[in-house]
Amino acid sequence: MVFSILLLACQIAGGVVYNITTSEQLFPNKTLVSSGKIFELGFFTPNGSENQYVGIWYKNFTPSKIVWVANRNLPLVYTDRSAKLTIGSDGNLKLVDGQQNIVWSTNASGRSNDTSAALLDSGNFVLQDANYSEIWGSFNDPTDTLLPSMKIGVNAKTVEKKT
Ligand SMILES: *[C@@H]1O[C@H](CO)[C@@H](O)[C@H](O)[C@H]1NC(C)=O
Ligand SMILES: *[C@@H]1O[C@H](CO)[C@@H](O)[C@H](O)[C@H]1NC(C)=O
Ligand SMILES: *[C@@H]1O[C@H](CO)[C@@H](O)[C@H](O)[C@H]1NC(C)=O
Ligand SMILES: *[C@@H]1O[C@H](CO)[C@@H](O)[C@H](O)[C@H]1NC(C)=O
Ligand SMILES: *[C@@H]1O[C@H](CO)[C@@H](O)[C@H](O)[C@H]1NC(C)=O
Ligand SMILES: *[C@@H]1O[C@H](CO)[C@@H](O)[C@H](O)[C@H]1NC(C)=O
Image (cartoon, rainbow, N blue to C red; front, side, top):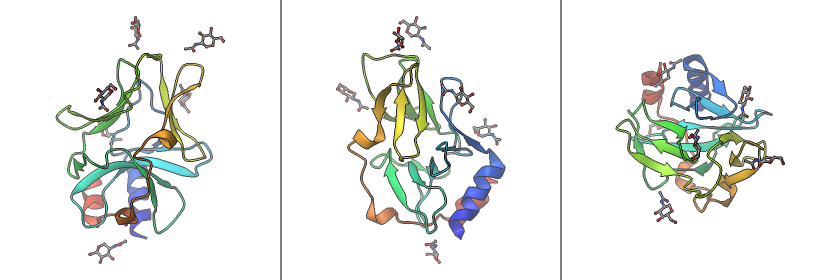
């Protein structure tokens, strides 16, 4: 219930996107959804927490269940609304905080810099080259673990701040 309010807030605030490219960054006021609308990726704050993470959850599933978290060890503060998930000039995905510090990166080297990122209906978040061939995938990322402490709702205060 609380969580669907968040999704509603996201949609009112900024809507959804279907990929991240060098020209389309993902801010906390938007979410990335898979083409079949099964999974959703975006910024979230666990209930009662002051930390903000980028993660993947089932789009139409309550209570919400986070299945992957990018920056588990380096959370953003929940008030940081100018953090962004972006593609750098080297073609890697980067999570950048409001002070422009790189918090997390896919860090794949020696590959194409003409890349885009999308969320597949399998729940795999992929960075792909111009031929849609996978360079990096969240399924292969060591942080791809279920976090017991994050079967969560969302802090209602954060939702209010969003709008
Ligand atoms: C979303 O947030 C970004 C960064 O703060 C801002 O530039 C953009 O205008 C916002 N978009 C909407 C629709 O609120
Ligand atoms: C990103 O999504 C837009 C809109 O759905 C689409 O037109 C564009 O071709 C996509 N870009 C890539 C690189 O997949
Ligand atoms: C990709 O790398 C090539 C060669 O280093 C460079 O010319 C080009 O500007 C880069 N593209 C982007 C989008 O950064
Ligand atoms: C990126 O990879 C290099 C070489 O493997 C490593 O030294 C560096 O710590 C990595 N950076 C991040 C942010 O994972
Ligand atoms: C994409 O595929 C074409 C045709 O197979 C190939 O010439 C090109 O080098 C590929 N580009 C990348 C970035 O892998
Ligand atoms: C969030 O936390 C508040 C206060 O601890 C609690 O009342 C509420 O039920 C929690 N919501 C969810 C969805 O867990």
